[in-house]
Image (cartoon, rainbow, N blue to C red; front, side, top):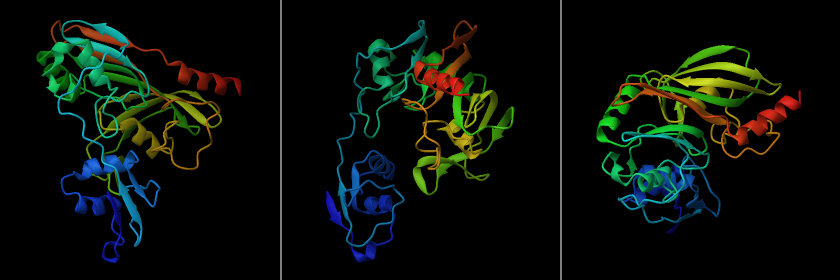
Length: 306
């Protein structure tokens, strides 16, 4: 589809302008299409909040939606633990959790379905067994429920905040506090619905992140973060709100940050520890994942540059 903006429409947000013309496409999907580069304004990508101008040519390429039934894909998984009810995997950076706009194939969900065909029907049809998520560019530990009983138990443990989730992160700036707790609500950014943001009371869901500094450098800080709640992009949003965005974060990192001294594939954020109660045996299960080489290389460079 290609349309030129008329005078009566000038000043409208790009996503709203598109929604008025594509009534059969949800606004959420339109925002995803914009973020993935399927919408171009005079040949260039823009944010959903872009205000359209008279005479601009809007080109929209709508890829076919992913099929309702998830197709299994024989993608290798780094399995840390597996039994009849739970599967713990170590997800690499760059892997998307489940299909979405621009990511129809190569997802962790499809790999899990191939590994455990019987997981069909556990949880959502397009995210079988998924009880918590990691962002595409975040690496580390995840637990997958293989049975309905495990899914019920693990989701209840997450809701009651008894699942232990520990992350390691390298952030911009030299943090002065040794430790702290961020208790700030998180919700959709009203200016850009593809992002999350700290919101005022009543406009977001309560989100709590603990952190403790592990090491300081002249322009970076290496820290441990623990989730008490599990909101979308929580650690990234909370640390950015303190003025210390995670290294490699193009969404929440701001524009005026010093360049990284070495190439970093993904975010400098890794889910290093995970603990929960086994749904059947009731035994406490604890798992650890070493920092991946992509972050270790960056830390090594900073240590040698002192």
